Amino acid sequence: MRAFVLDKELAHQIFNRLYAIGYDGKGMTRPSYSDKENQAHAVFIEVAEAHGLEVRKDWAANLFVTLPGQNRSLPAVMTGSHVDTVPCGGNFDGAAGAIAGLIVLCAWKTSGYRPQRDTTLIVTRAEESVWFPISYLGSRTAFGLIDSALLETPRSDDGLSLREHMSACGAQPDLCGSAPVLNAHNIDCFVEVHIEQGPVLIEDKVPLGVVTAICGSTRYRSAVVTGKYAHSGATPRRFRSDAVMAGASLMTGLYAEWQAAENEGHEMTLTFGVCQTDPLQANFAAVPGKLDFVVDIRSRDVSLLERMNACVIQNAHRVEDAFNVQVDLGVRTQSAPAVMDKGLQALASTAADALGIGYATIASGAGHDAATFAGQGVPSLMLFVRNENGSHNPDEAMEMDDFFAVVNVLEKVLRTRSERIS
Image (cartoon, rainbow, N blue to C red):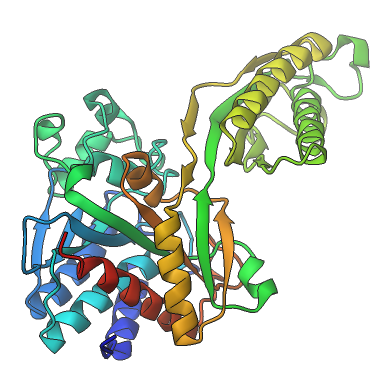
């Protein structure tokens, strides 16, 4: 198979430019549908146009960079990821996948290579649902899977609606439901590179993870336990409506259910990423009357997600009675699990073996845009890059040698699929 020169210096430059755009004094903050996300997309547009690649945006301002194929009627090969971040995140989550795809297309274009079919990089908008509580917002808009009512969803930091932020970023939200969108029948496959967000590849001492599946989720992002504030010394237990004790009991009850599920051989995670009292009312000498918390449950097993969701509701009712409080779980959000294509997994494994790159098969506990593509029936795959210190924090530590090992595997997979003539 023909070898291409991947431009390492260009990759370094793009990572550095994204760093300069997103740095908040400690980590990276590029909010979804913000000027900083716009600036990041502009970097990709500049590089793509300088290399003579086709560039377009859809109604939601997702970015598409294409190297035209010899037969443009064939379903396109696609790759990509996102460049928005969580607040004070790292510079590799999302961006590594977007840069990987761009580096491959630039290398092909520079060498004069033209695949049989279009090969397209998508840089999605708003993948990080911390800003808008909608999973895979960018890729779902690309497929026309967003109801126009969701355009009124407020962004978490400023309360302005998705519609307002889209308009400010040059998107056309009024076209939601009527503009052309992606069609799975016109897509041959989708391959997404992403840093690993856990420690498995570090432990296995290999740079590449070939992903087998992406977990789904069930979430409560704005749950509240409401009790009654009372004097901490003058209120006996039988008179209390302690919101914190009720919340703690609910959480330990769900933790016990998690342990039971694992003992049965199931795989899942349970996280309470926010748990806080009201700083304006709670104090050392008061029984707490209000507790805000969130619930995040993830698994590849849909039935287990439903079972755990029932446990959340049951435990909420239990602590209401036991602690004389009220529990409002708020709106439930969820995403479906996705299985990665076995043929693409085999292609990636074969490419890694040919290149002498060590790899492990691994499931993704986090959600990614690849799940949207897979959910639409597009053969999909994720390739993880070894990364120390997890993700969604400033200490993400992907080594560039590992990155380019995975980009080489990506290039082989994309080329194999793009050279198919039928």
